[in-house]
Length: 470
Image 1 (spheres, rainbow, N blue to C red):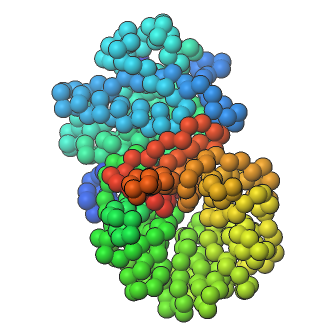
Image 2 (cartoon, helix red, strand yellow; image 1 turned 90 degrees about the vertical axis):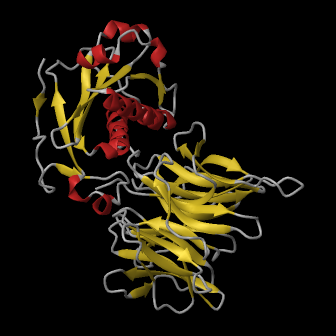
Image 3 (spheres, rainbow, N blue to C red; image 1 turned 135 degrees about the vertical axis):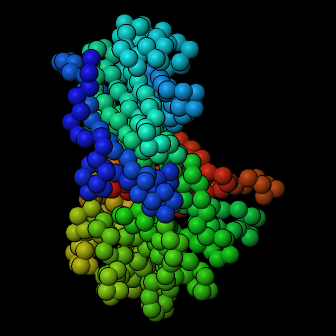
């Protein structure tokens, strides 16, 4: 059987079917230049599609994970074979962490990777209860790059569901693994994947009364971990820009809280201002042209927006209360924020110009840290009720409140770019000797299911999820 290519695998114009990536995604231009080009190619074997292909219904909540056989990608020589196994391991781990997939142990496989990559023997895969099968190959290119191709098969329908190839530098194998997992996730769930993303967070160390807090960044699975600040100054509340190239955060470098903007590639940064009073709680607008933040003056805080091109600010709230933690809706027509203007800490929504303010939280307890979903349908929040912290979601009018997690202390929800997964941080209580109390990142599917730990080298708080790479 021959492959039928629908795009040109040799295109090198970055404006025409070619994506430029590097090992760390956002830093590719500095580290590898334009040589780190990745060409994504769709292909098909000409098989007739089954009348009803397998899929996961993610609208009905989490059910038993789909059993999937993920074979190591076959290489032309031992070095490529090693990369192929590592790529399969990374992609499998991505899919299993979603809670929607269960990888079948390769000890149960009845067909060799080499044979399956050429022509799957579907009865063998049905015998071990695989519903989906992933095969792949790695080929060396004359220019030193590698060509990675994979295919997703419907075992029951005996048909190919997805076929795709990537041409890139060998060093980029890990990112290609995430792209493969994204493609599989999207085909089987109907939703965008979120594995080719990064997390910025606050890395914590030291004694409880002398905490060192640094900005840190990593891939969503904990790989490629890097510190962005040295810990000499207290930092909090990092937030990604839509371009993934800039991070807004709160810094105490000048002795009082100020919002700073850091360019991840160049490490250059600037302080937002000049602004009278303390500034905090920054968040970019979805188009990246505006920055929401709060300013505290004489014991009162209000919400402002700044045009990042002109650096002109505009006040959005003017109330003798604490208004903070603003977050735009995806279409930028509205803003959700927290305020104690009604006597207790609650969530409010207003128009983007500051008008039409209305309260949306009415449950028991206090609400904080609202974040609008990238889909626009839900608002995530932190809640304190009955002495416990909770992470939950509600519809944008406040209805349909759903608590996803409860613990001793948890805060700071952030959305995956597909609007389905929430990440936040949790702190465990200390024992009677002052030991313990570790602060860790966690994530959960909004449909329910187990809460998963997010690996970091040490204590971690204030996570922010990056958008998908453009």
